[in-house]
Length: 307
Image 1 (cartoon, rainbow, N blue to C red):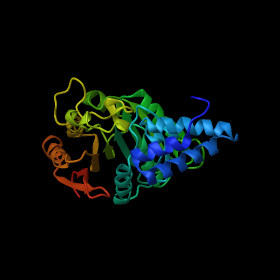
Image 2 (cartoon, rainbow, N blue to C red; image 1 turned 30 degrees about the horizontal axis):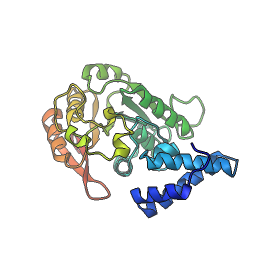
Image 3 (cartoon, rainbow, N blue to C red; image 1 turned 45 degrees about the vertical axis):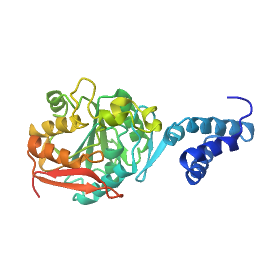
Image 4 (cartoon, one colour; image 1 turned 60 degrees about the horizontal axis):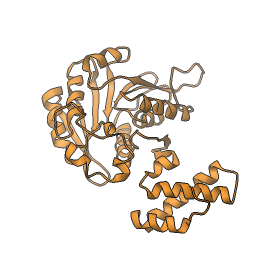
């Protein structure tokens, strides 16, 4: 980093990219993060701010620069190549938490989150529901993602534990599990200790190959393609729907989703009806509804065996 960097010039360039209001807000967040982390003043703060602004101008997501992302009442740690939790994911997760009869220590809930990434979905459910009422398992094929999910659990140790707590204070439990969602038999064996599950959630990769090249560079240049592409390398082109077929096949095997359980899948723009058809034909679940996000877009497919 040069000894002198024109910070107002960097802010002006950022404003031209994301708008003046957003640039001012992000500048405020960056300054707050610096003052929180640093006791020094003057040149040190100026240097840190210039470095962070330069990264942002190059297109790096603000959440990666700050290292955290607000998600519900949690602060989720973020780092590449794990997809940053989005506001629509928070929206439907809280709706799900309110839609289910609140579990209790007497009637606990088992939750399975597939393609868990940072663990934000199960951790938000664990922090929302009664302490001691929930055991959540988060599955991902990425060891780096599971390490991040583990770090997020430790960061919220007051409400959730990585193992059954030994203290007298009840806590909900989150278990990160290294497994492949596409390996149905292997995953069923890995989950044998905890199934059946009362809730299965997933926000899997769903971006079609033809759309991937059109993504904003702040996403394409900083995210692992494996966290985005709905049809992974070696799989046929199914318009981004491969993981939904795998999940439906998993549910169809039985003994994974409880008789009164919920299957809740976040989908990409325009994919809801196609995913609904997959759930009907492969998982053979007929009680299906589609939830819109806060902007009115069909975003979540929710299926149950019966009312």
